[in-house]
Image (cartoon, rainbow, N blue to C red; front, side, top):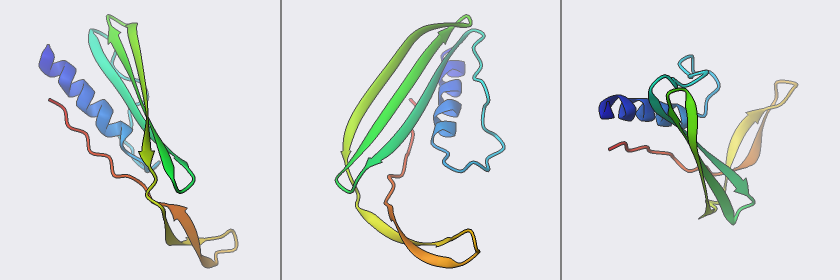
Length: 108
């Protein structure tokens, strides 16, 4: 039972860390039959100085949501970087975008 729960958590955490909308393996709805943990992690940039990391977990037992845990942390901003982007006319130009944190998930 613990292995199944950990496996479901690992899959949920891994999918939450995907930032590309092109992934075909994204779970539309998590398994809620016996027990599962659904976790979402998001990082929002607040200028150059601060980022906000939100971790939201939902605990499911026998198809019932039994607990919702939300944790919000303030992280130091990583500054900006320059990237080449294409506009509507197909022209390339340099733009300034916030640097992103890399997310690594460890499940024990």
